[in-house]
Each structure stands twice: as C-alpha cells, then as structure tokens.
Length: 145
Length: 494
Image (cartoon, rainbow over all chains, first blue to last red; front, side):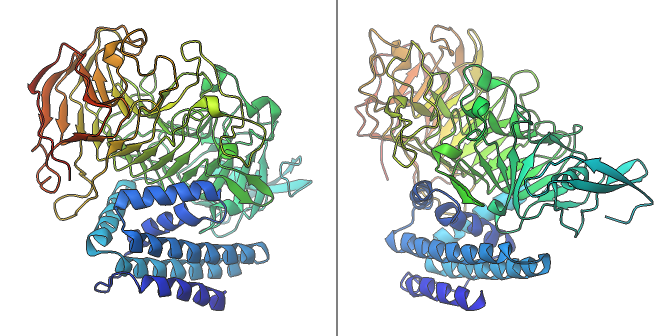
C-alpha cells in the first residue's frame, strides 16, 4: 500500500510541478474533505466514467481552471483513484484494525494530494476552494450528532 | 455502547445475503434495545445493525463490508452515526429487497432526531425488482425514499451513494434550531462494486434525487446528481413541506429529468410555491441537450440509454426536456449558476397558482459564497432553449403564449397552467449573464420591481454589468405589462 501510493503520487507531482507554483499552503481538515469530494467527483473508481468526465467538465467550469490547472486535477484524480482501488482491495481481505490503518493511509494520501493541488492552482483558485470548503463546514457543523 | 444489564436471545430468520440463520443477542437497559454491535464493534448482519440503528440514545452503528439485503424499513431511533467503511462508500451497500417493496429503506422512528449517515450506499434496487423498475405515472410520486429524513431535526448526510431508487433517493427536512444537510454525496453516478455494475442511467432514481421538506436551513451542498427521472433537487411546498432559508449550493447536476415518467418537462432544480428564501448558487446545471425522444432501452452501454421508456404527454408529443431551474417561491436568490445546454428554459420563474404572487426574487451574477476577498469565476446561462425540433417549443404564436417565450431567463405571471393572472413583484436582475441561447436571452412578461441592477451586491466590481448577447434574440419584445424601475441594462460582457 505505502509503496504503491508513493508511485501514484509521484506521477501526479510530476504534472503538478509543471503548473504555476505558489507559496506553500497547508490544507485544513475542511479543505481536505472538500477536495476529497472534488477528486471523488472526477475519478471515483466505483462510478460511471462517462458521468465522472461530465463532473470534471463542470469542475473546470465552476472554478474557471486554466488548462494547466485542469490537467493537475485530472492527474490528481487518477492518483486518487489508484489509492482508493488499492484501499478497497485491502478492505476485502482485512480485519477491522487493518482497515482502520489503511483508511488512515488514505487520509494521508488525500491530504498530500490536497496540499499539492493548492500549490498547483493560481492563488485565487486556491482561495475559492478554501472559501467554499469553509462554507460547507459551517453549513454542516450544526447537523448530526 | 456500554455493556447491558439484561440480555436476551432472539431467533431471527435470514435477513442478510451473508447469513443464512442468525441468533441475535440483544439487551435491554432502561427501556433501550442494544445490539451486539455498536460503538467500536462493527455489525456483521442486518438484524444486529437494525437493532443498533433503532436503539434510542446516540452512538455509532457501523456495518461491515458487503451487500446487505434489507427486508424491512430500518427506523432510526436515536442521534446515531450510521456508517459503512470510511473512505469507500461503495463498500457497504444497503439493498432493497422485494420483501421491503415500496417502503423506505431507512427512515426516522420519531421526528426531531439528528442522525449522521455517512460512507454508505443505499441501493433502491429498482433494477432488480421488476414491479419497481419502472413505477408508472403518477404512482412514482408516492412519498417513498431510500433514505427518508423529512422529519429530522438536524440530520447530516455526507459521503453517501444513492443508486437506483424506485421513487425518491433522499427526503430531507429540518426542525428546531438545527439544519439538515446533504453534502459530498452522489446520486445516479453509476456503480461498480461488490458484483453490482450499473451505468449512470441505470443507477438513477425514478423520481427526484433529493426532496426538501420543511424547516429552516435545509441544504444540499456540493453533491453530484445525474440522470434522476425528475428533478435533481426538488423543494416541496405543500402540506408537511414549505421551509425557508434553504440552500442548493455548488452541486454538479447533469442530465436530470431523464426519464420524465409523466412526460412533462421541468426544472432540474424545482422549487414549489410555499417555500421561501432559497439560495441557489454556484451550481453547474447541464442538460447535455437531452430530450426524451432520443431515449432507447436496447443497450445500457450506449449513450441515450434509459432504464425505462420515458413518459408521454399529449402536450409534448415530441418528447420532454429539462429546464435548468423552475421556481415559484417567494424570496429566492439565484446566484452565479452555470445553466447550460438545457433544451427548455435556463430559468423559468412564475407564480405557483393562478392569482398568486411571486415576490422578491433575484437573479444575480454575483457569488455570495465567494465574497469580498475571493475572486469568483463568472458563470453564464448559455446554450439553452435549443429545442428547435420540438413543435411549439419556440413559437410565440400558435404554441405557447408569448409570455412563455423560451429563454435563458424567463419570468412571467402565468402560473403553471400558462393561463393564470398572478403577479410578479420586486424582481431584481443583478448583472445577469445570458448568452448564446437559441431563442431569447431574456423574456419578462407582466413583472414589476427594480429590474436591471448593477450595484446590488458590492463589490461586484469584476463583473458589474449585465451580459446578454449572442442569443437568437436577446430580449423578447413581444411581451407586455412590465413595470420596472430600471427597464434597461448596461450590456458589457467580461
């Protein structure tokens, strides 16, 4: 799992580094959750690829990403899909403790992807993502238990 | 959950695809049933999971990996966290059985509860139950959902897959001081896990994906919603519905109104009268040029496949098609939505009933969720109203009345039967952007209010003016009865 994840993320980083570089930004938990949904929308291995492609077009449209930014998200989506596929393979053959450990590794991988994406897009786009993430966190904070 | 003082054994018939015979131990403590799972102990069969979820109090009910056949509605009894496997919603699937039939998969035992439901899949399984595959019109409007939380206090639904609901996927309502939300969830996105393989259209709901009921602050935030037979998000304003200050924000909405069981076009976002002050912002609402006459049921892998033959209606003999937004609710705010490629209207707003009033509605290019310090991306209402092959769709004579001229933005006083004489007051059009729509960019009929406005939300300095250009005809001049303070707009496109 760990080795596999490193390989996939390095594939993404190679693309991400070609995008505009900005000051290092650390994604907050709410931003990581938000960006996990972004990645899930465009590259969930469980979803119909046709609808994932439509979601990817919508993502680019909503945020006004340029071609480099769009490519960064596409590559990150592929890396995310590989991480999830590997995780799901582990789930099927594992006990609960192993699943929890693997899930923590997924969290780490998604955080790494989120941080890389925030530096791969223009500052105003990173700001949009962060502001939207904070709005969702606020809206959902008084629900549930 | 803590250990219980009194334990009993209950014989239970097979209720799980994984378990042939179960002997379930449950315990009674202060009138509360406790299952042998809960807390950090994962449930490994449906009866135990059901007992955990139906207990009062609060705790975590986690289901183990697999496809779980649900033979009877699970009634949430407390403010639990109900979950599958973190980071993989497709790993735990609650699947409708023929025995469950036309009932909710999960609902609330009593009103006012505030559960969290996350990382799980609700499979309405209309594909697998022949009597529920293509529920006919108007039966598909029976109030049945795979997850029915319309009586919730402040429920939270997140990271959930909803597939193949024979009626609705999710009912959501709020009460008390909290607000119920659904976020980061997927509706009709296709599904491939645990031996289940369905395309997007095969995984969609027969009716709307999400329906809001009463309360304040109910919201759908950043979900993916596709191929629902009716709307992606519908707000119910009738008895038991209503509500105010609701939110539909940031959703990726594709090709809903796909089967149109009743054969009647309508909005991918649909807001009934009786609801007030909904904010609809930053959604991408793409019709993908869908019209039901293109549907075929021969090959699920081909484009234009629909699980059921679309409905028919004599008023629309050439097929039905989606609008972007259709609304009849006072006080609504439509902010910076991308509404594209719908063969009907981009936005159609009109009073709910004959003689009723549609008041204080605003359509704006501003994004209040990306304020002052945040530079948002301007969105457009564009490439809609392209149904040139549909009889009567575009005509302003011999078909729909002139007030219903198909446009990127249409606001009029006709009500749903197109013959009403309602009123539209306090309409604001704040630097709206309506471009490249096939017929009209904008059509207003018998409306009053501020009209065009460039400065309502400050700072909208980046995009302060209206942008209405490259439409078949930018403004429908055949209309009448308008009384606007600012009847003209400054047209400067970014």
